[in-house]
Length: 106
Length: 116
Image 1 (tube, helix red, strand yellow):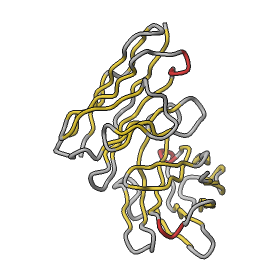
Image 2: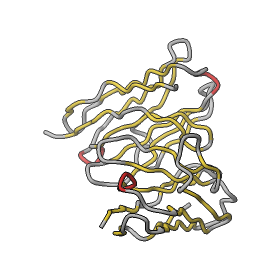
Image 3: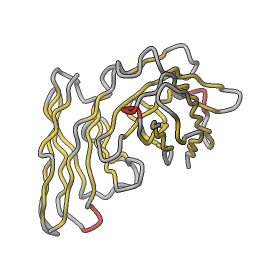
C-alpha cells in the first residue's frame, strides 16, 4: 500500500489552522496513525485509528478520514509544533509511512 | 511508562554484519508484537520488520528480506535484528517500537553506519 502525503512542507504562523493529508492507494478502513518527529528524537504517536487522540496529546491535534483519504489538523499552531509529521498505515504488511510533512513556524 | 533501549549500533564495513538489541521493560513483553523502523540521514521513516509476540509471525520489508533476521527472547524481554550483507544504503538510525497495530512506543534509536 502506497501512502501519499502532502504537502511535503509548509510554513504557517502561530495560531493558524494547519492541515496535512495522506492518501492510501487502497482502502485501509481506519487503520492509520499520525506521528510527530522532532530533530534527533523518536517519532511520537499523536492520533490512532485515524481519529482517536493518543493520551497526553494536546487537543489542538485532530484526525479524520477513513478508506483512502485522511487528514491531520492542528487547530491553532503553536511554536512547539514545529516538527515533521508522518502518517502510517497499519492495515497490512509491509507497513508504510507517508513521505513526511515538515511544518515550520513563520 | 514503557521503556525500550536499543544497543549494538556503530560503524561496519560494506558486506559486514551487525546485531542490534532492544531491551524492553515496564510492560508484558510477550503479549506484544515488536517492530524495527529505520531512518536514513535526512530522510523519512522506513518500516523494516515486525515479529509477533510468540515469534511465529514475522514480516520484512523487501529492501532487507534475505539479509536481515528479526528474533526475540521473551525470557530476556529482548528484541533482536541480525543484519548481514550490509550496504551503504542501510546506514540509518534504527528504532525498535512496540506494535499495537500502530507503533505506540519507540526506543531512542541506534545509529548504524555502513562505510569503508
